[in-house]
Image 1 (cartoon, rainbow, N blue to C red):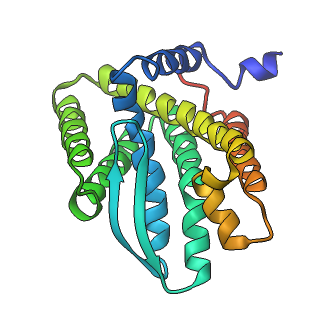
Image 2 (cartoon, rainbow, N blue to C red; image 1 turned 45 degrees about the horizontal axis):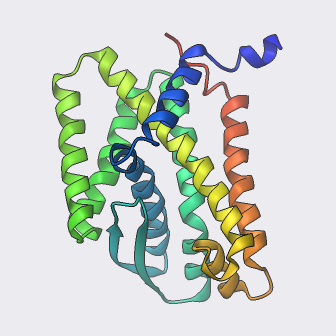
Length: 227
């Protein structure tokens, strides 16, 4: 039991609880959850740049997103399809890993790069632009005017939202892959791309990789946040 408690802190559970409550508040919840959508769609976009092209990303008020890409070959399209959920889980893990080691500036730079790339190159729909500009402005204002404690807690809240969303969204796609295998987003797309691997297996894969990154966070002490 002590070994388990050594890997977590009360602050981790506090902010995970706040993230769960916040993401379920009408309107505000959808607004903050879009940060995970941005990371997810950016994962698709960055992978598509390797042997393909990104045409546009759309971000929607209901937290859904779409990345429009074209590819020179099958492998580029295949790995682009995998990248979204894996990238979300990776960034959630990386965020906690950096915070646990008091490396706040690299995390701030990473988040600003994602916002900047999407704003300048990819997102063109109204809500997407509104979200990037408003969230980016609030984030920059916080960095400039907020105390170090406020900045640290803000980053911890964002990391908690990313972790909660990376797990819940992958679990949702797992359920959809069994209930509606022909309209299960990335799982359906990968099933069509591979032909011999059904959407259900891709749904399982997405959920398992999210749990694997959660376990990696536990093993590396990334959830041990100092007060």
